[in-house]
Image 1 (cartoon, helix red, strand yellow):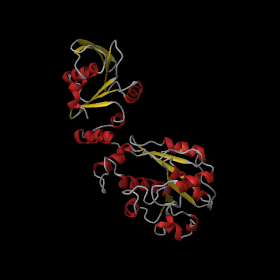
Image 2 (tube, rainbow, N blue to C red):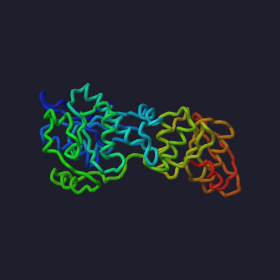
Image 3 (cartoon, helix red, strand yellow):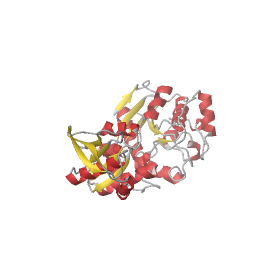
Image 4 (cartoon, one colour):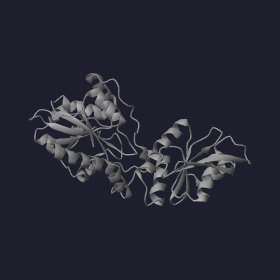
Length: 337
């Protein structure tokens, strides 16, 4: 867990801990509470599927302290069988939110916060932000009655937080639906000029990424965090139940792949003379798999079709040259995830 610029507030001050994505709704919900004199702190969770970058930017802009916490291991356990199932792709939105509130609740108990909150708006997302979904999240978080949604609180049952007078319900909002006009006017009133566009920041809603993740979870019983990060970049080819080939699409892609490459665990391939992709082989480094990876690598270079070409293979820091026939990349389409 990493805490940026945190402080405890005054001794008798009411303290709220809020989930923060860094978006407009997160910012407005915190400032709305802050205007009541409540000391607010944010928490943002990290996995290979979503980052804390926007939240960190919002924290720097507003001065609101931010806690960041990597929950990848627990998240992947939940992903094996989310109680509420998945959305259109591999997005377990309801159980994801319940887990985040549960994790935030652990910090609430340990650090003396009085309640949890979020920037959720009723009806903004038809499936994950309707009354039933919000109620499901609250019940399954383990902190029933302690979760406040300041932007739509007046449209929801009164919480324990409001009943106890920790927060003035009359100063909360009754926003609903997908329109962001009210929030944008609030931002103007608060002097907030920069905030992310309302685009999904979770890769689990992406069709291609979800296909790759599903393949990884269905075929490999064991995998590490690096392999989850690999899913974000390049073209992916499945050779067997433990082995994949990943081909960079661009110079930027190559750089990202190399950020997670470990020479003692993976094999790196690229053309020894011509421009082309960096290719990573993970899993079983059999002679046949290395040969297939080299041919895939060659197919994405400017080597002449039908001719042998030289591919550099780096294994645990030792480089060798493998000569393979160049064939069309289309020939490997059956292996692509």
